[in-house]
Image (cartoon, rainbow, N blue to C red; front, top):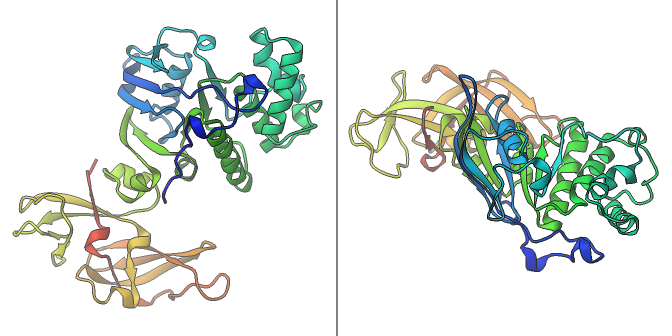
Length: 384
């Protein structure tokens, strides 16, 4: 997947403050050497992160990895033990949340149930002392931007989940923040609505060119919405890159397995340094090495299921094994196969675009096929 780049300031619509719908100039967000502990538990370990002005970066990781703590430090709800946080070149580490020029959207919307949609959106403007006429104008503009014109007099309980999330987004954007923080913003929505909201949020973010930090545990959400993805685990950032780079060229076993299914192989480098011997007793296979490796060294490979060759397409490959189909699942646009390879003593996974009648798969349960991969499709990863 090739991510779309965020349009820069000279490509944007006009400013909200001059009667239209553009946010102020986007600002960089920089975390340098940030660390946070709770007693003996280190939640975030010496974290460095740089968001370019106008980009959307997804901080992705499992529960407890430190991503929410990182977001709370950026927001000002937690203070780092060490390190600094700056927005637009200004150190905000010691500033209170309301002085950081941030907007924030939560998973549970956090709307005021007793206030109308318009009153919810206007809340930040009222706190900032904006006059009634100017406030009303900005609210009307924001209702248009979030595609809820004419709904200003409704109450949150009269809206769908997606509409409530739009209101929460509008409330954050109407004050023209320099940075937008999204904390699992789509977690409360069903799958079909999540997908449409991914397009809506991404579209607004690109239109306004607002620097955005998205915190999520949802791999699909991160890969779909972000310019770059930072994968986090154990309080550390393991890899940062474009979605396609993170998915296709993971640097560690954790990243390979966390971002979708991956076939992982561990083996010993052959005597000539150009092949890998896979246990138990398989013949060496050739893999592309960025640098020559020492004979006898242990390496870990990752091969994505869609990169695996199956059936006739695997016949000419050096990295080829016989495998029996033990499972087949139709997933709409593709079929997922589970196969057992006796030579490897393990199961492998292969994805293939679905063909034939709806719900059909190409290979039958119990069928024995050739299975393999091209050397260039095997990525060497750290074993951690």
